[in-house]
Image (cartoon, rainbow, N blue to C red; front, side, top):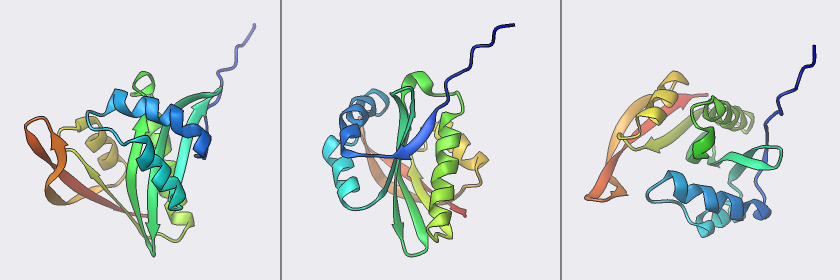
Length: 153
């Protein structure tokens, strides 16, 4: 029997050379995407920035700010063709582990209440709703609230 091995996806720190690929994905999955400059600023600020790739193709990326004993997940994204396949869960678990390894006791994030897939993922990974941030996100009809979520690491 001939077995074809499935290529393995891997995580690695984001580099400036990744910004073009990240910037191509971001507007395809978000109506109000981060800019290349936002990602560049995160890299320059020393945020924990990661890419998830398979055979040179970018599947997703994440950006986390670490301050004292807290981790704030600023962006976590999986390219549209790869969504719903468990990559987001793996990337989130990696970011939680990274936060823990850097001494964070808790992780926080904001998510649109309209993003049911993300809310379900976060809840399944131990995040709980902590508060609502009114008018946090831009939206076609003005502003959309954010659900502030947190999890103990």
